Figure 1: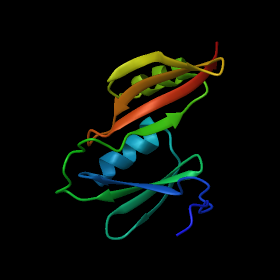
Figure 2 (figure 1 turned 120 degrees about the vertical axis):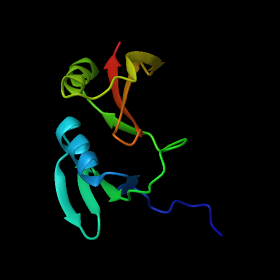
Figure 3 (figure 1 turned 180 degrees about the horizontal axis):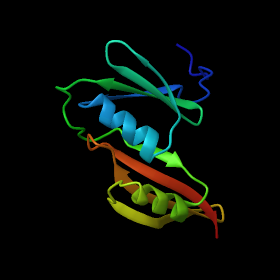
Figure 4 (figure 1 turned 60 degrees about the vertical axis):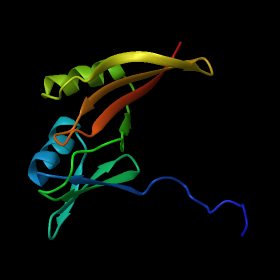
Length: 128
């Protein structure tokens, strides 16, 4: 077995099991502002987040998330994005704050959660 690169260039898609598909579509589309792509039977919906597709799989028996995944959405202006997010009704789980300095830039994070309790972070790197 070789230890060379597989040629992975990023995440193409992430999948989340959700209890209420319509409620989750509304959150990701209307609150986060992700473009809705399409639905597929029996209970799938696809949205776009930058280069990554988000697949929501509706399952009324889905268990609440425990330990992940955590989605981190990159934003340019975390303060403005978080204000817009909360104005759209998203719960504040953790207000934006600087968590690290990397290469002359501050890394900022703030958190909300989706209707199923999946953590959703807004992340920004700010020149500092």
